[in-house]
Image (cartoon, rainbow, N blue to C red):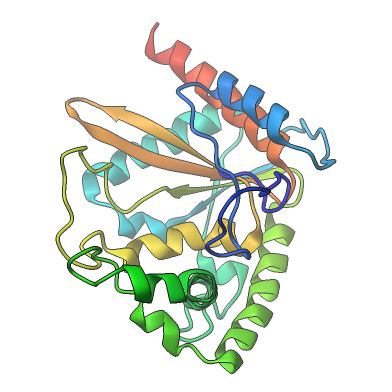
Amino acid sequence: MRPSHGIISMHGVKSFSPSFDTIGIFSRTINILEMVFEILVRTEIEKNLNTVKNFYVLEDYLIVVSSEQRQLYLKFIEESCHILRLNPTFIKLTDIHPNSYDSKNGESAIFKTIFCSEIWENIGIWSKTNLEFSKTTYVDFSCMEAIDKNTISEALKWKEIYSDELNSLLGTHNLLCIPSSPNVAPLRNREFKKINEFDYDKLRPLVALSGIGKLPQINIPIVTNGYPPVGVSLLGGYKQDRFLISNTKKICMQKFKLENV
């Protein structure tokens, strides 16, 4: 789980990108995740256990994953909506804002600008002193140094615009469903030998939404026969973490019962 930005203290944590950094929770079960969240959260947020009114699906993101993953993803959507007793609502990213795919000020582009500029501000000097591209790391930090202040300022303005639109869409009663990653989980013994071998251009739009909107997001691994799990994510509105946890719990528990009948 990625909780809403700012609701869990970052005290004692080395920050990479303050605009997006948050304390994540990893757990084998939704029940443990819920308990850990309640222990960590220190900010007053609503105990919203409302019924889901809309289950939004970004159909643009269906093409990001393979055809095999897409079938599992669609099956999860169908089962989740059956459990929640509603029909999915398929939307496009441009329905949220018409400029969402703009090469300069689109959501993925401004996420990259802010993320990279803040990383450079926080670890730029250290990376120059301690890291050597292709020897000590396959992540090239040099491009981050070239981002000018005007570009950053413009990106921050767009971030607020997109954040408002995302939270207007989700509100207090709605969920958004997207793939967690364009690929299945990499195996433990997999080594990446070159920059962007993981295909960050495909991954970035998927992680940008929660970061830009400060939204809570829960990744649910869908187990496949003999293959690494496929990740599906559910997102809720800002500070609607308990609403997201509650409905994810409902889906997971009911789905587990159905699969074991």
